[in-house]
Length: 312
Image 1 (tube, one colour):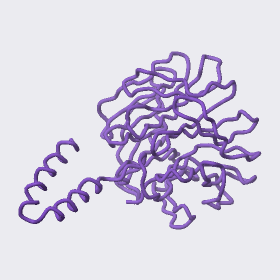
Image 2 (tube, rainbow, N blue to C red):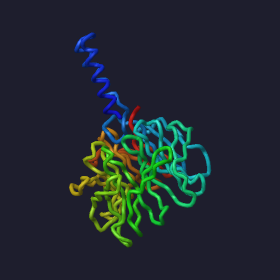
Image 3 (cartoon, one colour):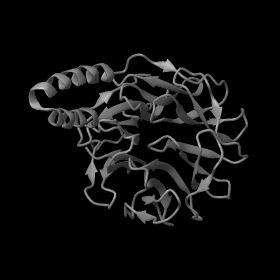
Image 4 (tube, rainbow, N blue to C red):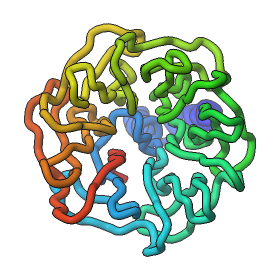
């Protein structure tokens, strides 16, 4: 465990202080404490944005440069990318074997691992835990969609939600790893709302309580806000809210649909999928609604499902 390793390192540094001088040991301790692997859900330096376009996964710099095609050119549908905390893998959903399963791949392409192996059901919307040891996803293996978690190697499946006859989708781990936000229905014929729940299935909280549709939740890096999409004003816009509910801020005010928000690791911007009137593109904007800029400029394809990773 990280705590145990750090305790051993602290002890070694205290011994080093006697021989090499207190200031040198303290400086080394600071390096050890802060040179931990970057985690996309925590504050950090914004890196590339992963997204789906023309049924493949790509990455792009926030300024629109450095586009990399990640998944191979096949007739399958590769969507919903999610960076691992280390930035060394991207999880995504693909119907390569007929139904949708969760896969992971290197950000530069290659090294594909099939995580879920359900032959007749759909596994979608992966989200890494902050430790990188679990992936949350939605699956209809029991008829309706529920939230599950799984190890990146495919073992240790845990069913998180157990709502019969309603669909729970679009999971997003909190920065602490202690909660998962998701989109769920408030009844068989109800509208979609944002909920949070513990990874073991306890302590469910209904975050939004509108009579309109709310979807696509994403935790802010410090866990103090959740971004989501809502059609409360007629068309879908990006909003943020406190994890316990309340304090809603409307971020986008476009007359076209805005979906799939993803906070930057710095928390200073939000990437989202929006329409330019012709097709969907990736945009970024400040959480207070200012400074919106386009990232992608494809005139022949819809770009969506953005996920903002950390710079490694």
